[in-house]
Image (cartoon, rainbow, N blue to C red; front, side, top):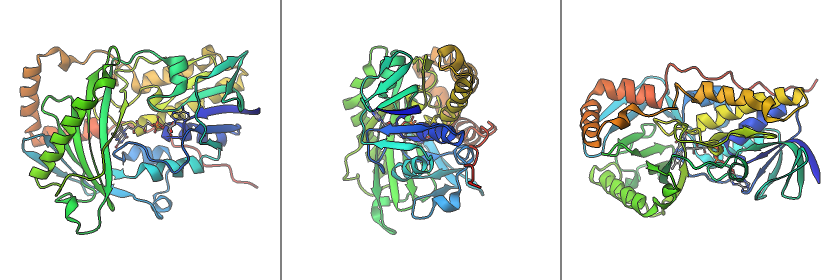
Length: 392
Ligand SMILES: Cc1cc2nc3c(=O)[nH]c(=O)nc-3n(C[C@H](O)[C@H](O)[C@H](O)COP(=O)(O)OP(=O)(O)OC[C@H]3O[C@@H](n4cnc5c(N)ncnc54)[C@H](O)[C@@H]3O)c2cc1C
């Protein structure tokens, strides 16, 4: 049995960020993931500048041999309506590929890695956790994404709703007609007419990512049955992109589906004696845009801070981890996303009419939808990860 100070289950952005911060604080950290890296993750691969800042990403280093597309424009509209094209002089976001991004972050974390290790239900023995009959630890971080085993064992509460989404990422060569009229670095976002979600087409470097996500009420796991309906909506969206000549033909590769939860709809218990949940495991994605990478990174950083403080006091009890719950509330709670959505109180037909009128406005589309809801400009990033200690 190998001992470690902290065992992180899941090596996505939430797990690797938390592990990086803990390793840099001098703790012995193991990251266990069922996958061997590099591995892919169902995702459009759009990161906002806050992510770059918080992770202290060296973009010149990152782009060596990897896709990094600076985003300097967005096309936005409701499906079937007129779209607005918004351009910017400076990069407003970046396009990455998750198979590269997650691998890069995990490698630079400096944590011990246990890859190809599928973690099942976790068991507590006294004040310790025994994981996979291989590791023994006082502190467990559940970073295993939407279906995280730690969340299922310890934090499971039914989510109010899930975002059910499908995407595909295909390689395109320069001049390849398959990419249609899509411009590199100009993601296109098309809101569904019932405003429950949006589809996207995003050309980044030599790849095009196409997908669609919708919010599905899930009081009793209905989100898991969204499959066939979602598939139809995705097919309709792909046909629309072809009709609009944004792409030339339907991708031959089959779309892949996944689900995740926004901070408004999550009911998960995010910490307890000896454990915290981070990222999708905690259900923290941004309510308006569905952005999840930033929330994964930020919760990873906040959890690391709380764990460091608790371990410094010699305790991993929930009462010593409640700083994490408070930090989450400040960052993702009340003002950010908790409470009822006032728009939901209006009848659907009225919401659709108002949304159509608002989306037709270039000002609303740029300043509110794009800059406030999607780019969250004006919201400060967290202090970046500290640099690794250099050896004397
Ligand atoms: C279609 C789609 C498009 C999206 N597009 C964007 C986007 O463009 N930008 C954005 O910001 N967000 C996007 N998101 C959301 C974003 O992908 C997630 O919020 C983000 O990946 C969460 O990171 P995480 O580290 O919490 O979990 P994950 O990235 O899911 O990582 C979890 C890790 O845990 C591992 N794991 C799971 N179960 C086990 C187990 N039993 N044992 C061991 N390991 C396990 C997995 O292998 C995985 O490596 C999108 C989501 C979807 C579904």
